[in-house]
Length: 104
Length: 145
Image 1 (cartoon, each protein chain N blue to C red):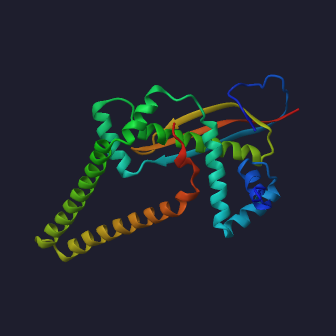
Image 2 (tube, each protein chain N blue to C red):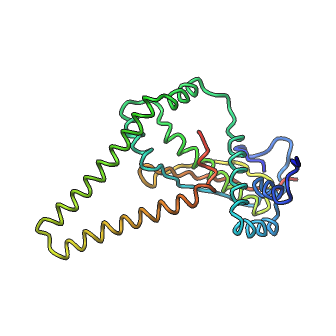
Image 3 (cartoon, each protein chain N blue to C red):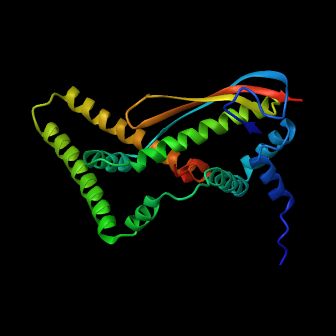
């Protein structure tokens, strides 16, 4: 499955647009991580607990988007975008969406 | 020693890579529901795929994070600190509940407080139980950044 942020795929032509596909994930850090992150926030620098949390949500939402594209028989997803929002403190929501297409 | 993958392992690889058609995928998911070992194998393959997607040159600070994670003082500070914090919080909750129950609270107030406490503990138990069940099949716990 080709996943790109561009509207087109160089060297390939789009035969059919399947439609919008998306995947979202909301993940939380456990209490221990939140406590560690709180203290790291006091002194500055990277809070790797939250870096990891966001990365987990990003990968999961991306996989869910690809799974939907595969289920709908697409060959690629173009114009992929990510969006985030805050559902609750200490939780990370990621939404990945794009246009599923069939290639010639 | 035969190192050739079995038919089920090949199916697990195809499933993890999203190469199965709808019918084959549904059939494999049915099989996986009755075979936790197969589900674990799929989760492992998905972790590998995730890690390979994240392959990038290490940042200079990665070695420092690694060194810190093995540092005894750092580890002891974190573990003992978290342990004391958890014990202190638990003790404070128990003390508050006991003090409230011993005070002049009406029977309805006491029953409400106990209900609140019991409900919270049950919800916590359910959440922990669900997490322990699903964690082995959650490949995203391996994601670094």
